[in-house]
Amino acid sequence: MRTITSASGQVETVTVRRSESADARGINSLICPSTQAVFGTVDVIHVL
Image 1 (cartoon, rainbow, N blue to C red):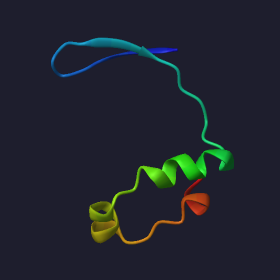
Image 2 (spheres, rainbow, N blue to C red):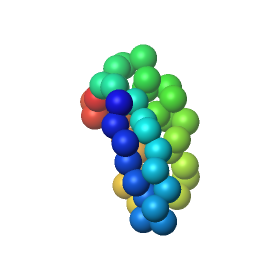
Image 3 (tube, rainbow, N blue to C red):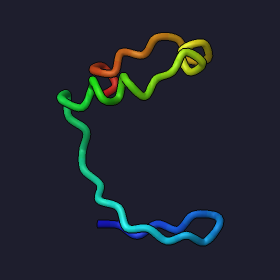
């Protein structure tokens, strides 16, 4: 676990883990049309 603090001073504890190929569908759902317009199509499996 890791504790992070935002610029506004809010403290939060998060759990970090490695991404797996099973996460690709969830990651793809975070990509919006404006992101694709700027960066183009991203092959999430290749990035992982």
